[in-house]
Image 1 (spheres, one colour):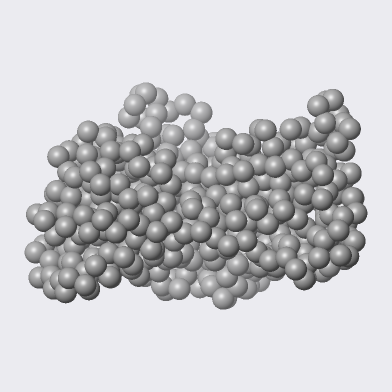
Image 2 (cartoon, one colour):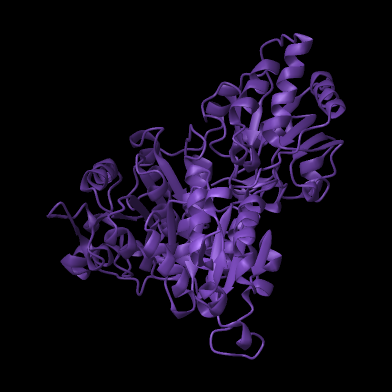
Length: 592
């Protein structure tokens, strides 16, 4: 059996598990791993500017392509900067392998330099966390990590590697090693029959598509059941994209924030909910008494901890979503069920309850931005967004057709996730147009990663909804606490016109070498302000951008962004205090 360093074995295993990209930052505590990466040379590495950016890149990569995302960092603060990313991946069921360096074994527990016990810190927010203290165990740990990340409910794993363990010589033969088999939990036959009976007997059933359906690759099976039984479909926010927005049975999204009016109405009118791959979290359900009502629930989830956690189902099925839906389809076929067309006109309800987006106002109404997005970008575009009013408007208004073409962090909601996630998504899917939709405050959290996209020539379009506010918190302060405190991030309010008050460089940006000024002077005095210049920041990073203030210029800006072939920032000045439709229960959404 050949001898090699433990890290050479680790990289060989990553290679055999299909890893093609790693996002990370080298440091003293992880250099033996990087040496093996360099020597083997088959896995591409991208140097992030912050470890949080690196793990969010791995996250976006995993969501876009359905594979394990991998990131690496050195010990101490490098490792601890992974915490937010691990929490995000855990709650959204994303398989990420975080590899961290560590001080030598003799220094563990001695408060040595950069020797934090990261494995213990992250245990509550990972599926498994290892601190490997014997080089001979490295191959087994890495193989087991990939099985754990993929099996059952997906999730992140951290492997912490002391420096002396990384350097150890071990016996390992890659020719006789292979990935471990992944067990997929099959459903119980009696439960399948019972679930179908309940669906056929219910007067007003509805099918609820959660993010777990997308993760399981079960969207086609879900849609086939809806079509076979002619049952209306609603989705959670994480289930957005699981079924085409314009499918005849697609009613919309249910929730107190990222909802559609039609989705909430059809759900409220239902008597039985067939929910697959959902967590029933608070942002989806709102007031749980209203949400549950007198409805019966069938809940399918591969994680037994989800069954009854928030909503006690009348029938709980702990099994793989794809296998369960395939079994129901087989039972439908066996019984030769021929359903009558759906009684309700779902497309008509969807149209009648659609929120208004055709505003011509200047400053631009945010709803108009999404009208232009829907009309301009095709169904192959992959959108990435994150927490804030920008995400809620996006969830309510964007029309998505294909699974894994709408990437969002729904459970943790860390500001700054979407820019590095866009980079990861583009690396995973270079054939796709990636579009990030972000708020002006959220952009500034991980904005340092824009230089990574420039350095590695990773093009995407970033649309910034710029109102000079922490918009979501401003709205909460307004209606709950009767204040407007510490949420304005523009530096001043100008009484004179913006074209006179702002220097030319801050008004326009360069697009293909041409200065673009799309109507800054048209802004009203009460909406003026001076804040972070996203166009100048793009230029400082070595790329391009422009500012847009006229809604009629949005499509042209989108086209310039695509044509540029570089990371392109579009700074859209929107109305400052536009409120977003939301509420505390799904039957009481305050519309604006």
